Image (cartoon, rainbow, N blue to C red; front, side, top):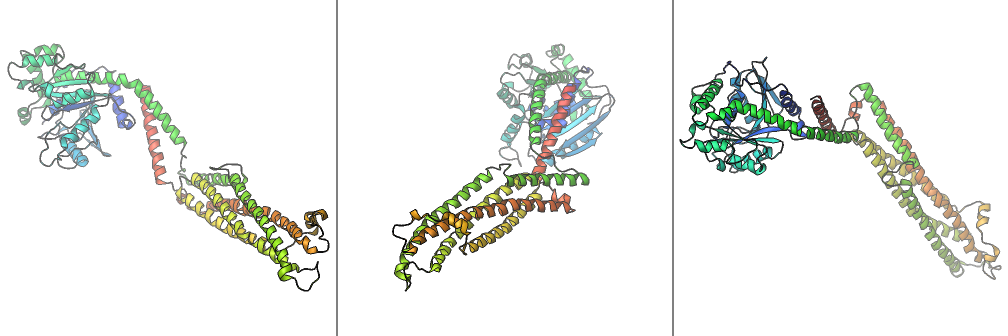
Length: 607
C-alpha cells in the first residue's frame, strides 16, 4: 500500500474541547492506571471476514495485517492522535518493549513481530495488549481496541478450543460497562445470526453501549437494500447508539495498491450515487468519515459519564495504597552516610524494645512477667509438696532410728549425721524441678526475644538471622551460668546451715512439743528439722527465681543490646541492611501504584 500525502481523510476536525478527554484516557492508560480500574474505551468485535480490518485501516490510514484465518492474534490498542505539525510517526509497545518508526508501510511488520513475540509464531492467540500509537495530520482523535475475529472451526495448527479462547478474550473486554462495543457486520449476511452481535447483546442487552458498523454494501443482492435501510434506521435490532454503514477497500482495490485516501473518496462517491443509500449521507449514517466523528464523540461522552466515578475510585485506591505503605518502613536510604544513620536507628529501636521487655514496660503477645510469675508459683507449689513429704520422711526416720540405728547410747542421745543426711537427700531432690523451671522460663523469654527480632527486622533478613542467632547463643550461655549458680545453691544447702537467730525464730515453742517428751530429746527432732526445712524452702523459693530472672532476662537483654551495637562497627552496611526481596518488591509495587494514582488524579483535576 502506498501512503498518500494528500488532503486529510477527515476534513472536519473535532472541537478542541474533545481532544483533552481522549488524551486523558490515553495518558492514564500509558501510565498503567488501567491496572487499577477499567478505563472507558472502544472494543472492535466482528466475525472473521466481516471487514473489521478494512474499517480500522480506513480510520488509521495504514494497512494492518491481513490474511485468512486469525489475523489479529492479540488485542491491539490503536491510539490515533491528530497533529497538524506531524507528517506521520508511530510508537508500538508490548511486553516492556517500545519501538518508534516513521514509515507507515512498517506497521504490518511491527504488529506481526509483536504478535509473534507475545502469542508465538503460528495461529495461537494471547490476551496481552499491543499498543500502537499513530500521530499524524491525517487521522482523527480516537482510541480503540481491535480484538481477534470470531471463529467457530479450528484450522490446521490451532488448538481445538480456539473458538472458546477467542470468545473468552472478547468477553473479557466487552463485559466491562465502561467499554463501547463496536460490532462490525457485513451487509450481505443476516445480522440477527452474527456471533459478534449476539455476544454484544448478551453483555449489553439494552444496547446502550453498542454501535454497529455495516460493511460491504456493494455486495448486497439487488432488492435487499430495503432490508439494510431498516437495519440502519434501527428498526430491526434496536441499538441506542445506532448504526453506520461504510464501504472500505475491497481485496481487488488492495491488490491494485489503491491508497486509503483514494478509497475514502470512492466511498463518498458510492453513497452519493447510490439510489437507496444516498439519503444516509444527510442523516450522517454513512461513510467512514461519519463513523470517525460518531466514535470520537461517543467515546468522549462515555469518558465524561464515568469521569466522576473514576476520580472517586482513584482517590479511594490512593488512600488504600497510602495506608498499606504506612505499615511498611520506607526502606534504607541510598547515601552511605544516611544509611549508617538509618542502621543506628533500626538497631536502637530494637534494643529499646528488648530493654522495655526486660523491665516489663511492654507486652509482646502475652505478658512475660505474668507468665514467669505463673512458673515461679508452680515452683513454690513444688516446694510446698516437697515440704509435706519431707515432714513424713523425717518422722519416719526418727521412728526407725530407735529400732535400727540406736546403739548403746542412753535415751536423749542420737547421731546428728543421720538426720543431716536426710535433709541433704530430700533437698537434692529439688534440683530437677528447679532446672525444669529454668528451661520453661528460658523458652518463654527466648520466644519473646525472637518475636521482637522478627518484627523489628522483618524487612531485613540478615539482621533478623544475626539477632536470632545471638539471642539463641546468649540464652544458652546464660542458661549454663544459671545452672551452675543453682547447683552452687544446692551444694550450699548440703551444709545444713542457717544463723542461730533465724533458726530460733522457727523452732516450735515448748507447748508445741509432745507430752512427756522432756526425757527424750529425740522427740524434738521432727520439729527442729521441720523448722530448718522452712528456712530452706524460703531460701530456694526466692533464690531460684531471682537467679533465673536476672540471668535469663535482665542480663540476656543487656548482652543482646551490646552485641547488636557491635554491628555498627562493621563496614558492610549494605549487606546488613539488605532487604527481603518480597518486601522490597511489594514496597516498589505500592510506590509505583501510588505514583500512577497520584498522576492520574492530577490529570483528572487539571482537566
